Image (cartoon, rainbow, N blue to C red):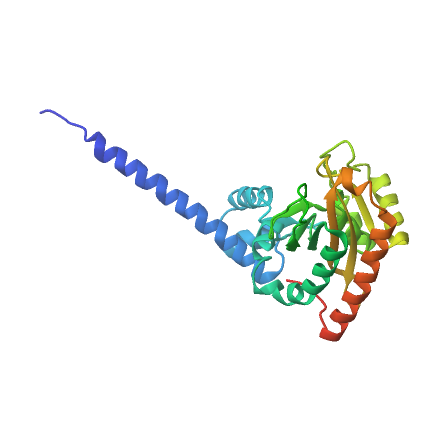
Length: 273
């Protein structure tokens, strides 16, 4: 009796198995995101129980989603939705109200400075770009609406961190600050001192902290409790920014922020997205 092997059928079976495993992994990832979103935050034990899978699988899944910033780990080791998700939502109707309300002020700043103007929101350890008007000058800085930048080395992140509670700042500094350029402030003590300086001045300035040749200044917009819900920024190449009167830009931003606060209070806006 001669035995024959159908390798084509075997290969197809293995491919189907691999495909099914990939689909199962995707399904678990989506389920995890849905559960965390629905509950606000969940720890590994809660997530494993709700998903009906083991702790090892749950830990591996959460680590992968955190590395991709779909989830963010809180100081109590629970997980919440991360900036990768909120970044994608930035251009949707969830932020359309504040974008529409702030657009005339962005246009006013754009007219007065000829520089790129941003509206951003702090989300965890990043800022998410909600709106943008690009400078008409030949050399300018451009970000992507819905994109993200590390909060500790861009002016809109620094100003919004300066307006956060001490507990939030402590949580933010519980992980090492990543250096992106020689101008990035990564020492926790120096960063706290920077936040103190920004609080006193009322606006933040960045000169190449994230990208060596890009600078900017920002002011925070806050809710009725003084918690930042967004930031307005003037962004420019460092060489041009240094040639300007930075204090004048700061004062212009503070004046614009005062107008923005009046609009927000009249519209009873207390949060974004």
